[in-house]
Image (tube, rainbow, N blue to C red; front, side, top):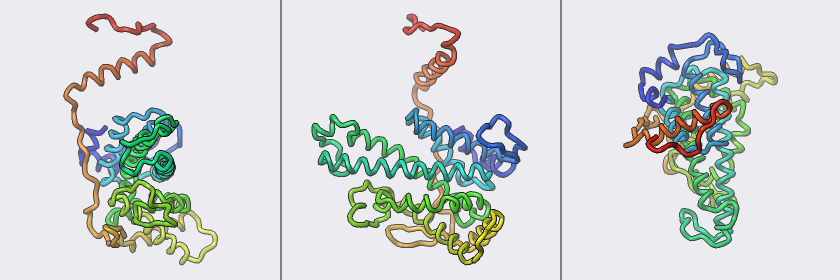
Amino acid sequence: LLCFSQDDGFNVTAFQHLFLPSVPWYQERYMKQVSLGSLMLLCVLRTLVFNLAKLNDLYLLDTFLAVISNMSPHMESIHPYASQRLVAVTLTVLKKYSSCAHRLAAAREASGVRAGDSSVLTSESLHSSESPVDLEQMLDVYKRSVEVLVRTICTCLRPRQIHKNTNIAYAIMHKQHSILEALADPAFLASQGVAEGGGAGSMPPLSGALAGDLAFLRSLIQHIDQRIDQAAEQDLSVERIMEIIERSTSTFPGIATSGGTAQTITRDDHLPVKIAHQEPDEPESFFVQYAWDVIKAFSQGDLHWRQQPSAGV
């Protein structure tokens, strides 16, 4: 899938030209007239969530984050359910990142470890259930996930593409209170150079690119929310909200920050870098063992395998 996602022609076809009338094997939600790209996005997001919750496989994480990143410049007309899942998974990862960042800050404070210096640990921190080293590794996983997912949303909603992805904009507005609450956390205020009561100072900083993406997301929510308020209608239907979103997105300039300075994005110079598949020197050492693990896992009820392989096998 990563190799396919490197092909721009494949991505364009998957999102713009190839639609499935129905997907009977997809049990989470009945969908019709869904693009192959939307279906791929749903499957990748589901695998990503499962990996973050149970597997903790860094190879799998990097692979699927790369797939999402490669597809993001070509995502358009995404199915409403796929848009909802993209926003929901992004919100979940934002919350997990902030929770982990708070636990890491508390662990560092308790053990006397400064930010970015995990080589000096007290005996108390080494014997705690969550050491700063373990939390730093966990935080790095969530950080990479947040950066890719937030950048994917911002790429889909850039000025030249936003009118084709109003379903994502609607999903964001549906979750706007939860998103703004998550972005108000000191873990993300620290990355944007904002401190409230000194609480943000102890949080691990995020990259400047992510800070700009978060500012872009907040600006978009405020812009659309103002247009909805200006409509001065009490009972807004889904169709009416979508109409307002379509009109408001046409006037949204796209605000981001760079070095603390507001900028208007008017060209596609913020697209993610394409990630290519790199074949390891000895791929069989991973894939053969992985294949045998899968075979044994799915055949234990029918076949009994020796714990140790025979010589020469």
